[in-house]
Length: 620
Image 1 (cartoon, one colour):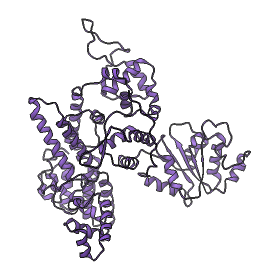
Image 2: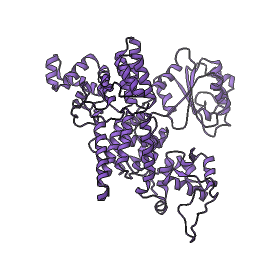
Image 3: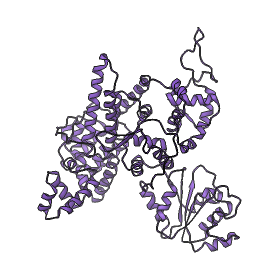
Image 4: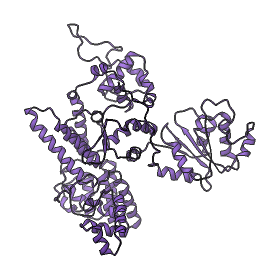
Protein backbone atom coordinates (compact mmCIF):
# COMPACT_ATOMS: atom_id res chain seq x y z
CA UNK A 1 0.00 0.00 0.00
CA UNK A 2 1.35 3.41 -0.90
CA UNK A 3 0.14 6.56 0.81
CA UNK A 4 1.20 10.04 -0.17
CA UNK A 5 1.38 13.12 1.96
CA UNK A 6 -0.74 16.12 1.09
CA UNK A 7 0.90 17.82 -1.91
CA UNK A 8 2.39 21.27 -1.84
CA UNK A 9 0.13 23.82 -3.51
CA UNK A 10 0.60 24.41 -7.22
CA UNK A 11 0.69 27.90 -8.73
CA UNK A 12 -2.47 29.24 -10.36
CA UNK A 13 -3.07 27.34 -13.55
CA UNK A 14 -3.25 29.10 -16.90
CA UNK A 15 -6.75 29.52 -18.27
CA UNK A 16 -6.83 27.40 -21.41
CA UNK A 17 -9.15 25.33 -23.55
CA UNK A 18 -12.32 27.28 -22.80
CA UNK A 19 -11.96 30.16 -25.23
CA UNK A 20 -15.24 29.43 -27.04
CA UNK A 21 -17.14 29.03 -23.77
CA UNK A 22 -15.53 32.20 -22.41
CA UNK A 23 -16.76 34.22 -25.39
CA UNK A 24 -20.21 32.74 -24.99
CA UNK A 25 -20.39 33.63 -21.28
CA UNK A 26 -19.18 37.16 -21.94
CA UNK A 27 -21.73 37.64 -24.71
CA UNK A 28 -24.50 36.40 -22.43
CA UNK A 29 -23.94 39.32 -20.08
CA UNK A 30 -23.67 41.98 -22.77
CA UNK A 31 -26.25 43.97 -24.72
CA UNK A 32 -29.86 42.91 -24.28
CA UNK A 33 -29.01 39.39 -23.07
CA UNK A 34 -30.14 38.40 -19.57
CA UNK A 35 -27.40 35.99 -18.54
CA UNK A 36 -26.57 32.28 -18.55
CA UNK A 37 -26.62 29.13 -16.41
CA UNK A 38 -23.37 27.13 -16.46
CA UNK A 39 -23.69 23.49 -15.39
CA UNK A 40 -21.29 20.57 -15.12
CA UNK A 41 -19.93 17.89 -12.79
CA UNK A 42 -17.73 18.82 -9.80
CA UNK A 43 -14.23 19.94 -10.73
CA UNK A 44 -15.07 20.75 -14.33
CA UNK A 45 -13.87 24.37 -14.08
CA UNK A 46 -17.22 26.16 -13.95
CA UNK A 47 -16.22 28.70 -11.31
CA UNK A 48 -12.92 29.50 -13.03
CA UNK A 49 -14.75 30.05 -16.33
CA UNK A 50 -17.26 32.56 -14.99
CA UNK A 51 -14.57 34.25 -12.88
CA UNK A 52 -12.49 34.84 -16.00
CA UNK A 53 -15.59 36.06 -17.83
CA UNK A 54 -16.34 38.82 -15.30
CA UNK A 55 -12.74 39.76 -14.55
CA UNK A 56 -12.35 43.52 -14.68
CA UNK A 57 -16.11 44.18 -14.77
CA UNK A 58 -18.54 45.62 -12.26
CA UNK A 59 -20.00 42.36 -10.97
CA UNK A 60 -21.52 41.45 -7.61
CA UNK A 61 -20.85 37.93 -6.44
CA UNK A 62 -22.53 35.52 -4.03
CA UNK A 63 -22.29 31.77 -3.40
CA UNK A 64 -24.54 29.08 -1.99
CA UNK A 65 -23.66 27.99 1.54
CA UNK A 66 -23.81 24.33 2.64
CA UNK A 67 -26.14 23.55 5.53
CA UNK A 68 -27.76 27.00 5.40
CA UNK A 69 -31.13 26.02 3.90
CA UNK A 70 -33.08 27.31 6.91
CA UNK A 71 -31.42 30.74 6.97
CA UNK A 72 -33.41 33.18 4.78
CA UNK A 73 -31.25 35.01 2.22
CA UNK A 74 -28.06 33.46 3.72
CA UNK A 75 -26.23 33.63 0.39
CA UNK A 76 -27.13 37.33 -0.03
CA UNK A 77 -25.86 38.35 3.41
CA UNK A 78 -23.02 40.49 1.93
CA UNK A 79 -25.50 42.45 -0.22
CA UNK A 80 -28.69 42.78 1.89
CA UNK A 81 -29.59 44.05 5.37
CA UNK A 82 -30.42 41.55 8.13
CA UNK A 83 -34.18 41.72 7.93
CA UNK A 84 -35.60 41.98 4.44
CA UNK A 85 -38.60 40.77 2.48
CA UNK A 86 -38.41 39.24 -0.97
CA UNK A 87 -40.10 42.27 -2.53
CA UNK A 88 -37.66 44.69 -0.89
CA UNK A 89 -34.68 42.50 -1.76
CA UNK A 90 -35.62 42.66 -5.44
CA UNK A 91 -35.78 46.47 -5.25
CA UNK A 92 -32.45 46.72 -3.38
CA UNK A 93 -30.66 44.62 -6.00
CA UNK A 94 -32.31 46.20 -9.03
CA UNK A 95 -29.29 48.49 -9.50
CA UNK A 96 -26.82 45.58 -9.72
CA UNK A 97 -25.69 45.32 -13.33
CA UNK A 98 -24.32 41.76 -13.20
CA UNK A 99 -24.73 39.16 -10.45
CA UNK A 100 -22.64 35.98 -10.33
CA UNK A 101 -24.23 33.19 -8.28
CA UNK A 102 -21.78 30.36 -7.59
CA UNK A 103 -22.93 26.96 -6.25
CA UNK A 104 -26.54 27.90 -6.86
CA UNK A 105 -27.62 24.34 -6.01
CA UNK A 106 -26.75 25.17 -2.37
CA UNK A 107 -28.98 28.25 -2.15
CA UNK A 108 -31.56 28.44 0.60
CA UNK A 109 -35.17 28.71 -0.59
CA UNK A 110 -35.38 32.45 -0.02
CA UNK A 111 -32.18 33.13 -1.95
CA UNK A 112 -33.31 30.83 -4.75
CA UNK A 113 -36.64 32.65 -5.00
CA UNK A 114 -34.80 35.98 -5.10
CA UNK A 115 -32.58 34.82 -7.97
CA UNK A 116 -35.65 33.65 -9.86
CA UNK A 117 -37.41 36.98 -9.34
CA UNK A 118 -34.33 38.89 -10.50
CA UNK A 119 -34.39 36.85 -13.70
CA UNK A 120 -38.09 37.62 -14.22
CA UNK A 121 -38.49 41.20 -13.04
CA UNK A 122 -35.19 43.08 -13.07
CA UNK A 123 -32.57 44.21 -15.55
CA UNK A 124 -29.80 42.45 -13.63
CA UNK A 125 -27.79 40.04 -15.77
CA UNK A 126 -27.30 36.70 -14.03
CA UNK A 127 -24.42 34.22 -14.30
CA UNK A 128 -25.51 31.09 -12.45
CA UNK A 129 -23.24 28.12 -11.64
CA UNK A 130 -24.87 24.77 -10.81
CA UNK A 131 -23.23 21.38 -10.15
CA UNK A 132 -24.70 18.40 -11.99
CA UNK A 133 -26.09 15.57 -9.91
CA UNK A 134 -26.81 17.70 -6.84
CA UNK A 135 -30.34 18.52 -5.64
CA UNK A 136 -31.28 21.93 -7.04
CA UNK A 137 -33.97 24.26 -5.63
CA UNK A 138 -36.97 24.35 -7.95
CA UNK A 139 -36.71 28.12 -8.31
CA UNK A 140 -33.16 27.69 -9.68
CA UNK A 141 -33.86 24.79 -12.04
CA UNK A 142 -36.80 26.74 -13.47
CA UNK A 143 -34.29 29.31 -14.78
CA UNK A 144 -33.38 26.98 -17.65
CA UNK A 145 -36.29 24.55 -17.76
CA UNK A 146 -38.63 27.53 -17.92
CA UNK A 147 -36.41 29.08 -20.61
CA UNK A 148 -35.71 32.23 -18.61
CA UNK A 149 -31.97 31.77 -19.19
CA UNK A 150 -30.01 29.61 -21.62
CA UNK A 151 -27.98 26.74 -20.19
CA UNK A 152 -24.34 25.94 -21.01
CA UNK A 153 -23.34 22.36 -20.10
CA UNK A 154 -19.56 22.34 -19.57
CA UNK A 155 -17.86 19.31 -21.09
CA UNK A 156 -14.45 17.93 -20.15
CA UNK A 157 -11.33 19.62 -21.44
CA UNK A 158 -9.89 18.01 -24.58
CA UNK A 159 -6.69 16.04 -24.12
CA UNK A 160 -4.66 18.74 -25.91
CA UNK A 161 -5.80 21.36 -23.39
CA UNK A 162 -5.10 18.97 -20.51
CA UNK A 163 -1.52 18.79 -21.79
CA UNK A 164 -1.26 22.60 -21.72
CA UNK A 165 -2.64 22.70 -18.18
CA UNK A 166 -0.18 20.06 -16.99
CA UNK A 167 2.72 21.86 -18.63
CA UNK A 168 1.69 25.12 -16.97
CA UNK A 169 1.26 23.44 -13.58
CA UNK A 170 4.55 21.54 -13.56
CA UNK A 171 6.65 23.90 -15.66
CA UNK A 172 7.73 21.20 -18.13
CA UNK A 173 5.87 19.35 -20.85
CA UNK A 174 4.79 15.75 -20.17
CA UNK A 175 5.25 13.08 -22.82
CA UNK A 176 2.03 11.98 -24.58
CA UNK A 177 1.46 8.70 -22.73
CA UNK A 178 1.65 10.59 -19.43
CA UNK A 179 -0.85 13.15 -20.75
CA UNK A 180 -3.18 10.32 -21.77
CA UNK A 181 -2.89 8.75 -18.34
CA UNK A 182 -3.58 11.95 -16.42
CA UNK A 183 -6.46 12.84 -18.73
CA UNK A 184 -7.93 9.37 -18.32
CA UNK A 185 -7.53 9.24 -14.52
CA UNK A 186 -8.95 12.71 -13.91
CA UNK A 187 -12.01 12.03 -16.06
CA UNK A 188 -12.58 15.76 -16.58
CA UNK A 189 -12.18 16.62 -12.87
CA UNK A 190 -9.60 19.42 -12.89
CA UNK A 191 -9.38 19.49 -9.11
CA UNK A 192 -8.39 15.82 -9.10
CA UNK A 193 -5.90 16.49 -11.89
CA UNK A 194 -4.36 19.28 -9.85
CA UNK A 195 -4.19 17.01 -6.80
CA UNK A 196 -2.42 14.28 -8.77
CA UNK A 197 0.09 16.74 -10.19
CA UNK A 198 0.80 18.19 -6.75
CA UNK A 199 1.49 14.72 -5.38
CA UNK A 200 3.79 13.90 -8.31
CA UNK A 201 5.98 17.00 -8.13
CA UNK A 202 9.50 15.98 -7.26
CA UNK A 203 8.51 12.31 -7.06
CA UNK A 204 10.96 9.59 -8.08
CA UNK A 205 8.42 8.15 -10.52
CA UNK A 206 8.88 11.21 -12.75
CA UNK A 207 11.71 10.55 -15.19
CA UNK A 208 13.12 12.58 -18.11
CA UNK A 209 12.52 11.21 -21.60
CA UNK A 210 15.88 10.73 -23.35
CA UNK A 211 16.46 13.05 -26.26
CA UNK A 212 13.59 15.39 -25.34
CA UNK A 213 12.71 18.06 -22.78
CA UNK A 214 9.69 16.04 -21.63
CA UNK A 215 9.02 14.03 -18.50
CA UNK A 216 7.23 10.72 -18.03
CA UNK A 217 5.25 9.26 -15.14
CA UNK A 218 5.42 5.52 -14.66
CA UNK A 219 4.36 3.79 -11.46
CA UNK A 220 1.42 3.57 -9.06
CA UNK A 221 -1.07 6.33 -8.32
CA UNK A 222 -0.19 8.28 -5.16
CA UNK A 223 -2.90 7.86 -2.52
CA UNK A 224 -3.23 11.44 -1.35
CA UNK A 225 -6.06 12.42 1.00
CA UNK A 226 -7.91 13.97 -1.93
CA UNK A 227 -7.56 10.80 -4.02
CA UNK A 228 -8.81 8.70 -1.11
CA UNK A 229 -11.74 11.07 -0.62
CA UNK A 230 -12.55 10.93 -4.34
CA UNK A 231 -12.65 7.11 -4.25
CA UNK A 232 -14.07 6.63 -0.75
CA UNK A 233 -17.18 4.95 -2.15
CA UNK A 234 -14.83 2.34 -3.59
CA UNK A 235 -12.28 1.88 -0.80
CA UNK A 236 -14.85 1.73 2.00
CA UNK A 237 -16.81 -1.25 0.64
CA UNK A 238 -17.15 -3.55 3.66
CA UNK A 239 -18.63 -6.62 1.98
CA UNK A 240 -15.79 -9.13 1.57
CA UNK A 241 -17.22 -10.55 -1.67
CA UNK A 242 -17.53 -7.12 -3.23
CA UNK A 243 -14.02 -6.07 -2.23
CA UNK A 244 -12.52 -9.32 -3.50
CA UNK A 245 -14.33 -8.84 -6.82
CA UNK A 246 -13.12 -5.25 -7.13
CA UNK A 247 -9.53 -6.20 -6.35
CA UNK A 248 -9.54 -9.09 -8.80
CA UNK A 249 -10.79 -6.77 -11.53
CA UNK A 250 -8.17 -4.17 -10.61
CA UNK A 251 -5.35 -6.65 -11.22
CA UNK A 252 -6.78 -8.60 -14.15
CA UNK A 253 -9.62 -6.78 -15.93
CA UNK A 254 -11.40 -7.58 -18.13
CA UNK A 255 -12.71 -10.81 -16.59
CA UNK A 256 -15.45 -13.05 -17.98
CA UNK A 257 -18.81 -13.53 -16.28
CA UNK A 258 -20.15 -17.04 -15.93
CA UNK A 259 -23.88 -16.39 -15.82
CA UNK A 260 -24.59 -19.92 -14.66
CA UNK A 261 -21.81 -19.79 -12.08
CA UNK A 262 -22.11 -19.53 -8.30
CA UNK A 263 -23.89 -16.64 -6.65
CA UNK A 264 -21.41 -16.63 -3.80
CA UNK A 265 -17.65 -16.91 -3.27
CA UNK A 266 -17.53 -20.71 -3.77
CA UNK A 267 -14.38 -22.04 -5.45
CA UNK A 268 -14.56 -24.98 -7.92
CA UNK A 269 -12.59 -28.03 -6.78
CA UNK A 270 -10.95 -30.85 -8.71
CA UNK A 271 -11.61 -34.56 -7.88
CA UNK A 272 -8.76 -34.49 -5.35
CA UNK A 273 -10.41 -31.63 -3.44
CA UNK A 274 -7.94 -28.94 -4.58
CA UNK A 275 -8.83 -25.55 -6.15
CA UNK A 276 -9.39 -26.01 -9.90
CA UNK A 277 -8.18 -22.75 -11.44
CA UNK A 278 -9.33 -19.25 -10.46
CA UNK A 279 -12.73 -18.94 -8.82
CA UNK A 280 -15.48 -17.47 -11.02
CA UNK A 281 -16.64 -14.00 -10.13
CA UNK A 282 -19.28 -13.78 -7.42
CA UNK A 283 -22.48 -12.98 -9.35
CA UNK A 284 -24.32 -11.60 -6.34
CA UNK A 285 -21.46 -9.22 -5.58
CA UNK A 286 -21.23 -8.25 -9.25
CA UNK A 287 -24.91 -7.37 -9.39
CA UNK A 288 -24.59 -5.09 -6.37
CA UNK A 289 -21.49 -3.43 -7.79
CA UNK A 290 -23.20 -2.95 -11.16
CA UNK A 291 -26.24 -1.41 -9.46
CA UNK A 292 -23.91 1.05 -7.71
CA UNK A 293 -22.18 1.97 -10.97
CA UNK A 294 -18.79 0.54 -9.98
CA UNK A 295 -18.46 -2.10 -12.71
CA UNK A 296 -19.52 -2.34 -16.34
CA UNK A 297 -20.49 -5.55 -18.14
CA UNK A 298 -20.26 -5.36 -21.92
CA UNK A 299 -22.32 -7.26 -24.48
CA UNK A 300 -19.79 -10.08 -24.65
CA UNK A 301 -19.95 -10.74 -20.91
CA UNK A 302 -16.63 -9.12 -20.00
CA UNK A 303 -16.50 -7.14 -16.76
CA UNK A 304 -14.44 -3.99 -16.23
CA UNK A 305 -14.25 -1.36 -13.53
CA UNK A 306 -16.46 1.57 -14.43
CA UNK A 307 -13.95 4.41 -13.93
CA UNK A 308 -10.32 4.55 -15.13
CA UNK A 309 -9.19 5.79 -11.71
CA UNK A 310 -10.61 2.83 -9.80
CA UNK A 311 -8.15 0.15 -10.95
CA UNK A 312 -4.99 2.16 -10.22
CA UNK A 313 -6.32 3.23 -6.80
CA UNK A 314 -7.27 -0.33 -5.81
CA UNK A 315 -3.88 -1.61 -6.91
CA UNK A 316 -2.09 1.13 -5.00
CA UNK A 317 -4.21 0.50 -1.89
CA UNK A 318 -3.72 -3.27 -1.87
CA UNK A 319 -1.37 -4.66 0.77
CA UNK A 320 1.80 -6.39 -0.35
CA UNK A 321 0.50 -9.91 0.28
CA UNK A 322 -2.84 -9.21 -1.42
CA UNK A 323 -1.11 -7.69 -4.43
CA UNK A 324 1.25 -10.65 -4.66
CA UNK A 325 -1.70 -13.06 -4.66
CA UNK A 326 -3.73 -11.17 -7.28
CA UNK A 327 -1.08 -9.73 -9.60
CA UNK A 328 -0.18 -11.57 -12.78
CA UNK A 329 3.31 -12.11 -14.08
CA UNK A 330 4.07 -9.89 -17.10
CA UNK A 331 3.90 -12.83 -19.51
CA UNK A 332 0.38 -13.67 -18.28
CA UNK A 333 -0.93 -10.49 -19.88
CA UNK A 334 0.01 -11.89 -23.30
CA UNK A 335 -3.48 -13.12 -24.28
CA UNK A 336 -5.09 -9.77 -23.39
CA UNK A 337 -2.44 -7.86 -25.36
CA UNK A 338 -2.81 -10.25 -28.29
CA UNK A 339 -6.57 -9.62 -28.30
CA UNK A 340 -6.00 -5.86 -28.27
CA UNK A 341 -3.46 -6.13 -31.08
CA UNK A 342 -5.92 -8.15 -33.16
CA UNK A 343 -8.64 -5.55 -32.59
CA UNK A 344 -6.32 -2.69 -33.60
CA UNK A 345 -5.14 -4.54 -36.71
CA UNK A 346 -8.74 -5.19 -37.74
CA UNK A 347 -9.62 -1.51 -37.36
CA UNK A 348 -6.66 -0.49 -39.52
CA UNK A 349 -7.85 -2.97 -42.14
CA UNK A 350 -11.32 -1.41 -41.99
CA UNK A 351 -9.83 2.09 -42.38
CA UNK A 352 -11.49 3.17 -39.14
CA UNK A 353 -9.20 4.36 -36.34
CA UNK A 354 -11.67 6.42 -34.32
CA UNK A 355 -11.39 4.33 -31.16
CA UNK A 356 -8.46 2.82 -29.28
CA UNK A 357 -9.74 -0.42 -27.70
CA UNK A 358 -6.56 -1.14 -25.74
CA UNK A 359 -6.99 -0.45 -22.00
CA UNK A 360 -4.71 -3.28 -20.82
CA UNK A 361 -1.71 -2.02 -22.75
CA UNK A 362 -2.36 1.51 -21.52
CA UNK A 363 -2.33 0.64 -17.83
CA UNK A 364 0.59 -1.79 -18.08
CA UNK A 365 2.80 0.87 -19.64
CA UNK A 366 1.50 3.51 -17.21
CA UNK A 367 2.58 1.46 -14.20
CA UNK A 368 5.95 0.53 -15.66
CA UNK A 369 5.20 -3.05 -16.79
CA UNK A 370 7.09 -3.93 -20.01
CA UNK A 371 5.00 -4.73 -23.07
CA UNK A 372 6.20 -6.68 -26.12
CA UNK A 373 8.03 -4.60 -28.69
CA UNK A 374 5.72 -5.80 -31.46
CA UNK A 375 2.66 -4.63 -29.52
CA UNK A 376 4.30 -1.25 -28.86
CA UNK A 377 5.17 -0.88 -32.55
CA UNK A 378 1.54 -1.59 -33.50
CA UNK A 379 0.33 1.02 -31.00
CA UNK A 380 2.82 3.48 -32.54
CA UNK A 381 1.49 2.76 -36.02
CA UNK A 382 -2.11 3.14 -34.89
CA UNK A 383 -1.35 6.45 -33.15
CA UNK A 384 0.48 7.75 -36.23
CA UNK A 385 -2.46 6.94 -38.48
CA UNK A 386 -4.67 8.93 -36.09
CA UNK A 387 -2.34 11.90 -36.50
CA UNK A 388 -0.92 11.55 -32.97
CA UNK A 389 2.72 11.75 -34.02
CA UNK A 390 4.23 12.44 -30.60
CA UNK A 391 2.23 9.60 -29.08
CA UNK A 392 3.45 7.35 -31.88
CA UNK A 393 7.04 8.23 -31.01
CA UNK A 394 6.37 7.54 -27.33
CA UNK A 395 4.98 4.06 -28.06
CA UNK A 396 7.92 3.30 -30.36
CA UNK A 397 10.34 4.26 -27.59
CA UNK A 398 8.46 1.92 -25.23
CA UNK A 399 9.03 -0.89 -27.71
CA UNK A 400 12.73 -0.14 -27.99
CA UNK A 401 13.12 0.03 -24.21
CA UNK A 402 11.34 -3.29 -23.86
CA UNK A 403 13.59 -4.86 -26.46
CA UNK A 404 16.68 -3.56 -24.76
CA UNK A 405 15.70 -5.10 -21.43
CA UNK A 406 14.03 -8.27 -22.75
CA UNK A 407 14.95 -11.63 -21.25
CA UNK A 408 15.01 -13.32 -24.67
CA UNK A 409 16.49 -16.72 -25.35
CA UNK A 410 18.09 -17.74 -28.65
CA UNK A 411 14.78 -18.98 -30.03
CA UNK A 412 13.19 -15.55 -29.61
CA UNK A 413 16.06 -13.52 -31.00
CA UNK A 414 14.71 -13.32 -34.56
CA UNK A 415 11.23 -12.24 -33.43
CA UNK A 416 12.72 -9.64 -31.08
CA UNK A 417 14.92 -8.28 -33.86
CA UNK A 418 11.92 -7.93 -36.16
CA UNK A 419 9.89 -6.18 -33.45
CA UNK A 420 12.79 -3.83 -32.72
CA UNK A 421 13.05 -2.98 -36.42
CA UNK A 422 9.33 -2.19 -36.52
CA UNK A 423 9.65 0.07 -33.47
CA UNK A 424 12.66 1.90 -34.96
CA UNK A 425 10.80 2.39 -38.24
CA UNK A 426 7.77 3.82 -36.45
CA UNK A 427 9.97 6.15 -34.41
CA UNK A 428 11.59 7.42 -37.63
CA UNK A 429 8.19 7.93 -39.25
CA UNK A 430 6.84 9.84 -36.25
CA UNK A 431 9.95 12.00 -36.01
CA UNK A 432 9.88 12.76 -39.73
CA UNK A 433 6.43 14.32 -39.34
CA UNK A 434 7.16 16.25 -36.13
CA UNK A 435 9.70 19.10 -36.10
CA UNK A 436 9.61 19.09 -32.30
CA UNK A 437 10.82 15.46 -32.19
CA UNK A 438 13.29 15.12 -35.01
CA UNK A 439 16.92 15.70 -34.07
CA UNK A 440 18.17 15.26 -37.67
CA UNK A 441 16.51 15.70 -41.00
CA UNK A 442 15.65 12.45 -42.70
CA UNK A 443 16.96 12.05 -46.25
CA UNK A 444 14.57 12.65 -49.10
CA UNK A 445 12.72 9.57 -50.33
CA UNK A 446 10.35 9.01 -53.18
CA UNK A 447 6.97 7.86 -51.94
CA UNK A 448 6.36 4.11 -52.24
CA UNK A 449 2.80 3.97 -50.87
CA UNK A 450 0.09 4.96 -53.36
CA UNK A 451 -1.67 7.16 -50.84
CA UNK A 452 1.59 8.99 -50.10
CA UNK A 453 1.49 10.28 -53.66
CA UNK A 454 -1.91 11.84 -52.92
CA UNK A 455 -0.65 13.40 -49.71
CA UNK A 456 2.33 14.83 -51.60
CA UNK A 457 0.11 16.36 -54.30
CA UNK A 458 0.83 13.91 -57.15
CA UNK A 459 -2.37 11.83 -57.25
CA UNK A 460 -1.74 10.63 -60.82
CA UNK A 461 0.88 8.24 -59.42
CA UNK A 462 -1.86 6.48 -57.42
CA UNK A 463 -4.35 6.10 -60.28
CA UNK A 464 -6.28 2.85 -59.95
CA UNK A 465 -4.35 1.71 -56.89
CA UNK A 466 -6.57 2.96 -54.05
CA UNK A 467 -10.08 2.22 -52.84
CA UNK A 468 -12.74 3.85 -50.70
CA UNK A 469 -12.17 7.26 -49.19
CA UNK A 470 -8.51 7.22 -50.24
CA UNK A 471 -9.50 6.76 -53.89
CA UNK A 472 -12.08 9.54 -53.50
CA UNK A 473 -9.36 11.83 -52.12
CA UNK A 474 -7.07 11.02 -55.06
CA UNK A 475 -9.81 11.61 -57.64
CA UNK A 476 -10.83 14.93 -56.09
CA UNK A 477 -7.23 16.15 -56.04
CA UNK A 478 -6.65 15.01 -59.64
CA UNK A 479 -9.55 17.20 -60.76
CA UNK A 480 -8.76 20.05 -58.33
CA UNK A 481 -12.33 19.67 -57.11
CA UNK A 482 -12.61 21.74 -53.91
CA UNK A 483 -16.05 20.51 -52.79
CA UNK A 484 -15.05 16.87 -53.43
CA UNK A 485 -11.86 17.42 -51.43
CA UNK A 486 -13.97 18.81 -48.61
CA UNK A 487 -16.12 15.67 -48.68
CA UNK A 488 -13.08 13.39 -48.68
CA UNK A 489 -11.56 15.36 -45.81
CA UNK A 490 -14.78 15.10 -43.83
CA UNK A 491 -14.91 11.34 -44.33
CA UNK A 492 -11.26 10.95 -43.32
CA UNK A 493 -11.99 12.95 -40.18
CA UNK A 494 -15.04 10.81 -39.42
CA UNK A 495 -12.89 7.69 -39.67
CA UNK A 496 -10.28 9.12 -37.29
CA UNK A 497 -7.50 9.99 -39.77
CA UNK A 498 -7.08 13.53 -38.48
CA UNK A 499 -3.72 14.28 -40.11
CA UNK A 500 -4.87 12.95 -43.48
CA UNK A 501 -8.04 15.01 -43.12
CA UNK A 502 -6.07 18.17 -42.32
CA UNK A 503 -3.96 17.61 -45.44
CA UNK A 504 -7.06 17.11 -47.59
CA UNK A 505 -8.63 20.31 -46.25
CA UNK A 506 -5.37 22.18 -46.94
CA UNK A 507 -5.48 20.93 -50.53
CA UNK A 508 -9.14 21.94 -50.75
CA UNK A 509 -8.28 25.46 -49.60
CA UNK A 510 -5.95 25.78 -52.59
CA UNK A 511 -8.45 24.21 -55.01
CA UNK A 512 -11.56 26.23 -54.11
CA UNK A 513 -12.49 29.08 -56.45
CA UNK A 514 -14.89 30.53 -53.92
CA UNK A 515 -12.90 32.60 -51.38
CA UNK A 516 -15.42 31.82 -48.64
CA UNK A 517 -15.15 28.06 -49.20
CA UNK A 518 -11.37 28.34 -49.27
CA UNK A 519 -11.35 30.17 -45.93
CA UNK A 520 -13.65 27.54 -44.41
CA UNK A 521 -11.42 24.70 -45.63
CA UNK A 522 -8.32 26.44 -44.37
CA UNK A 523 -9.88 27.07 -40.97
CA UNK A 524 -10.83 23.40 -40.72
CA UNK A 525 -7.35 22.32 -41.78
CA UNK A 526 -5.71 24.50 -39.16
CA UNK A 527 -8.06 23.24 -36.43
CA UNK A 528 -7.35 19.59 -37.30
CA UNK A 529 -3.61 20.13 -37.66
CA UNK A 530 -3.50 21.57 -34.16
CA UNK A 531 -4.91 18.28 -32.87
CA UNK A 532 -2.07 16.33 -34.48
CA UNK A 533 0.55 17.03 -31.82
CA UNK A 534 2.68 19.41 -33.87
CA UNK A 535 2.72 17.30 -37.06
CA UNK A 536 4.19 18.99 -40.12
CA UNK A 537 4.05 17.40 -43.56
CA UNK A 538 4.57 18.71 -47.10
CA UNK A 539 0.82 19.09 -47.60
CA UNK A 540 0.66 21.31 -44.53
CA UNK A 541 3.75 23.38 -45.44
CA UNK A 542 1.80 26.08 -47.27
CA UNK A 543 -0.80 26.00 -44.52
CA UNK A 544 1.88 26.55 -41.90
CA UNK A 545 3.46 29.43 -43.77
CA UNK A 546 0.03 30.93 -44.26
CA UNK A 547 -0.16 31.48 -40.50
CA UNK A 548 2.79 33.90 -40.70
CA UNK A 549 2.94 37.53 -41.68
CA UNK A 550 4.50 38.38 -45.03
CA UNK A 551 7.72 39.52 -43.34
CA UNK A 552 7.87 36.36 -41.20
CA UNK A 553 7.40 34.20 -44.32
CA UNK A 554 10.24 36.04 -46.00
CA UNK A 555 12.61 35.60 -43.05
CA UNK A 556 11.65 31.97 -42.41
CA UNK A 557 12.21 31.05 -46.07
CA UNK A 558 15.70 32.57 -45.98
CA UNK A 559 16.53 30.93 -42.65
CA UNK A 560 15.47 27.57 -44.04
CA UNK A 561 18.16 27.88 -46.74
CA UNK A 562 20.83 28.12 -44.04
CA UNK A 563 21.39 31.88 -43.85
CA UNK A 564 22.32 33.28 -40.43
CA UNK A 565 20.41 36.08 -38.72
CA UNK A 566 23.17 38.53 -39.71
CA UNK A 567 23.04 37.49 -43.37
CA UNK A 568 19.25 37.78 -43.42
CA UNK A 569 19.44 41.21 -41.77
CA UNK A 570 21.92 42.45 -44.37
CA UNK A 571 19.86 41.08 -47.26
CA UNK A 572 16.57 42.62 -46.01
CA UNK A 573 18.10 45.78 -44.52
CA UNK A 574 16.86 44.96 -41.02
CA UNK A 575 18.49 44.83 -37.62
CA UNK A 576 19.70 41.46 -36.34
CA UNK A 577 17.41 41.88 -33.32
CA UNK A 578 14.36 42.36 -35.57
CA UNK A 579 15.21 39.20 -37.52
CA UNK A 580 15.56 37.27 -34.26
CA UNK A 581 12.22 38.53 -32.96
CA UNK A 582 10.45 37.54 -36.20
CA UNK A 583 12.00 34.07 -36.10
CA UNK A 584 11.00 33.56 -32.47
CA UNK A 585 7.38 34.46 -33.26
CA UNK A 586 7.46 32.17 -36.30
CA UNK A 587 8.77 29.24 -34.23
CA UNK A 588 5.80 29.59 -31.91
CA UNK A 589 3.26 29.62 -34.74
CA UNK A 590 4.91 26.79 -36.64
CA UNK A 591 5.43 24.54 -33.62
CA UNK A 592 9.21 24.46 -34.21
CA UNK A 593 11.85 24.58 -31.50
CA UNK A 594 14.64 26.16 -33.57
CA UNK A 595 15.75 26.85 -37.16
CA UNK A 596 16.85 23.25 -37.81
CA UNK A 597 13.16 22.35 -38.24
CA UNK A 598 12.47 25.05 -40.83
CA UNK A 599 13.52 23.12 -43.95
CA UNK A 600 10.92 20.46 -43.21
CA UNK A 601 8.22 23.09 -42.84
CA UNK A 602 9.04 25.06 -45.97
CA UNK A 603 10.34 22.43 -48.42
CA UNK A 604 7.46 20.84 -50.34
CA UNK A 605 9.59 17.84 -51.40
CA UNK A 606 9.03 14.52 -49.58
CA UNK A 607 11.29 14.34 -46.54
CA UNK A 608 10.06 11.28 -44.72
CA UNK A 609 9.91 7.55 -45.42
CA UNK A 610 6.39 6.16 -45.31
CA UNK A 611 5.06 2.58 -45.18
CA UNK A 612 2.46 1.07 -47.50
CA UNK A 613 -0.53 1.14 -45.19
CA UNK A 614 -3.14 1.54 -47.89
CA UNK A 615 -2.36 -0.68 -50.88
CA UNK A 616 -4.81 -1.89 -53.48
CA UNK A 617 -6.39 -4.39 -51.05
CA UNK A 618 -7.27 -1.68 -48.54
CA UNK A 619 -11.05 -1.91 -47.89
CA UNK A 620 -13.28 1.11 -48.06
